[in-house]
Length: 320
Image (cartoon, rainbow, N blue to C red; front, side, top):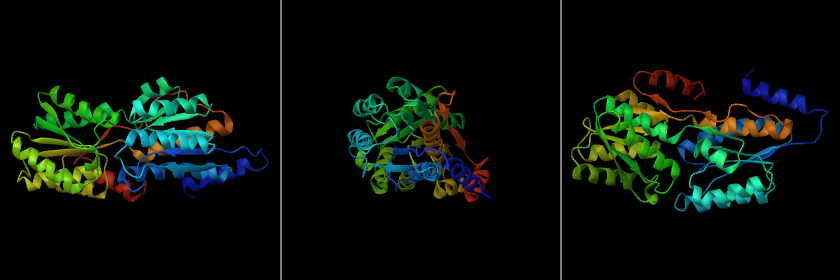
């Protein structure tokens, strides 16, 4: 019997003959069709099978686009409060826009877990139970360090979500990872409308490389942008001389690494972020449990040619 089925069976058995208490958990995240966030959503929903077996539920709330990210996400948090959430999970993407909404969660006595963005600092500032995810600065740093140590010492971070604190942290970390290893880093700043627009990102990368011929490394903030960056490098005639690392991975990213068109991917294990955050809150609402380890880190991990085959095997087994 699969572990997930065992967990659901155990939860079903545990709830029989007990009170009618159940946890209705709301999870604020990215667009469900965003490759990274679809994995986070799956993790949350898989953990939610236990909540559902106990009579509870998990509801996913995501924006239609990322053009007005902070205010839109804040509105989703307030929507979760209004719909009677027993617990809320959310990323602290844009603190100045989202902190008041998170504070309303805590003021209402609703258990809160910050995940994906903001770190334990945001959890402490807001009075949340915990933080689940990678440290964004360290994720970017890992990419810059990897590329610089490989000899690619003039890098640019492609930022397609300006103003988002986690994305700014990715780029700051990347630049420091480069500079701490005898390189230099910079930021190619694009409008938020470019996020997920492969043509816009590729054209911007092409133009930037032609205007800055000394750049030999680039860092992208997500799956789609990584592939678009590689396309822009090809259009600039720089394949083989400009090396790419990017956040997260999917099948095409892993194929890039296998073929050598991409140096590395930084894994923050989105599935685990959704799964752990929902599990922590469900158990807390149902049984009053807490996790003594505060800040549950799911990354960063580096995927490159040395371990890509193992990662692919994990994907095929449904474990990554």
